[in-house]
Image (cartoon, rainbow, N blue to C red):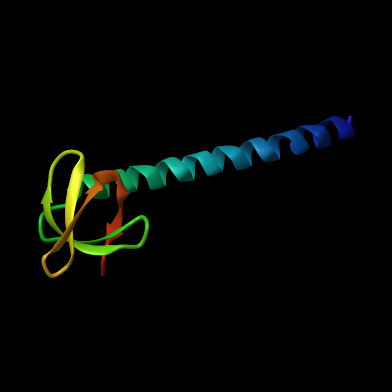
Length: 85
């Protein structure tokens, strides 16, 4: 029955690949949510669309970013992708 174990392997590999992809996506999502919760006033951040700014004010759902002197824009807190280096 060697062909039976070959068929099992062909079926198991895509399932393992999907499991790994789902695990890594969840890990990345948890990291981003942790970053978004840890944002404080004065942090330099980058939005998911690539806009750099400094956090001037924030609440549970929105972040006000100063992108240029005296130019403040409001973003959804979920749009923060990372802290700027």
